[in-house]
Image 1: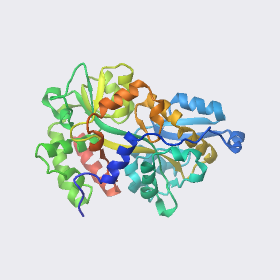
Image 2: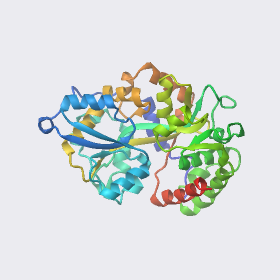
Image 3: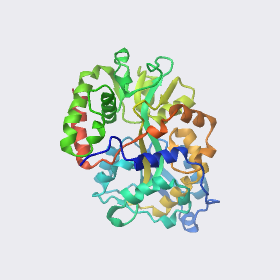
Image 4: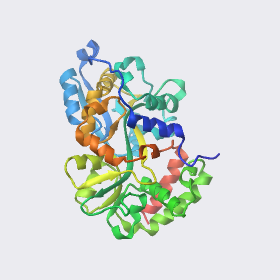
Length: 381
C-alpha cells in the first residue's frame, strides 16, 4: 500500500478552507434551554490550555449558572491514558486531535453527538465537520468528534537573537550549528520535522515521511534514519517541550532562540509584545484540528451541550482567538478578532503557506507505538 508524497488533497483542503473561510449564517440570539437553566450544575472539561479562556467561562457561568471545571491537557497521550484509567468518569467534554481516531475507535470511551441539540452547528466549518462524520463515526452511530480549534506546528524564534538564514525558516533551523544548545522541540513531532528537512538535503527520499504511515515495514527503516540523525545532533536541543507553558518558558526564561513550536503560544506572546515570531517553514507547516468530544461516562450532558452551543457562536470564538492565539473552526469568528490576530496570521502564513500545509495523517495504534519506541531512543540517548 503506497502513500502520496503528501497527505491527501482532501485533508489539506479541509484545513485550508478554514483558514480562508468567510462567513456563515449564524444562529441567534443564543438561548439556553429552560431545562439547563433549571438545573444549572456544572460541566467537567479536559482541554488544551486556554481553548475556552477564563473570560469566556466567566461569561458562560453568568448567563447560565453552570460552573465549568476546566482541567488543562498536555498531550493526546495524557488524555487517552486518563480516560482509560477512569473509563471516562469525571470528564464530560475533552479534546482529542483529528488524526487520533484510530487510537480511540476501540476504546468505547466517547459517545456520539446528537446534532439536533446543537443550534449553532451551522456555524461550524463544514469541511472540518465532515472529518467527524467520516473518521470519528464509530460503529456507524454518528460523529464522536466536533471540530473546535485548528493550528499548526512550525518554526518560532526570538527576533532579537535569531534570524533564519535566507529569511525563510526551515525545520533545518533546529539543527543549525550556530544555535547549538539553544533550540527546543517536542520529541516525536520534532523528529518528524527533522525527517521533512532530511528529505530536502538528500538524507531521505522525497515522500519518505508520509510513506512511513503506510506500514510498520515501511516505517522502521525511515524512522531509524531520522533517529540516527537526531541522536547525532542532540547537542542542539536545549529543551524538550510538552505543553503551552513549557514553550513560553523556553523562549522567555530558558535561553531558547529557535524552536519547532505550536502557533498559539508564540503568537500569544507576540501579541503581548514579546520579541518572538512564528512562521510556516519552506517544507510546510504541520496542521491539526482539535475537537470537542463527549465522554461516554458524561454525567452532565445537558450542561455539556449548552457549553458547546455557547462556544460555537462566532463572537465567542473570536474573543477566544484573541486570547489563545490559535484559529477557530467557527465560521465568522475572524470578524471578532483584533488587529494583532489578523497581523500575526498574515505574517505566520505568507505567500502560498496555506496551500502548502501538511495535515497530520491519521495515526493507527501501530504507528503511535513504533514512533514512541524511536522517540524514546532519541530522548534517552
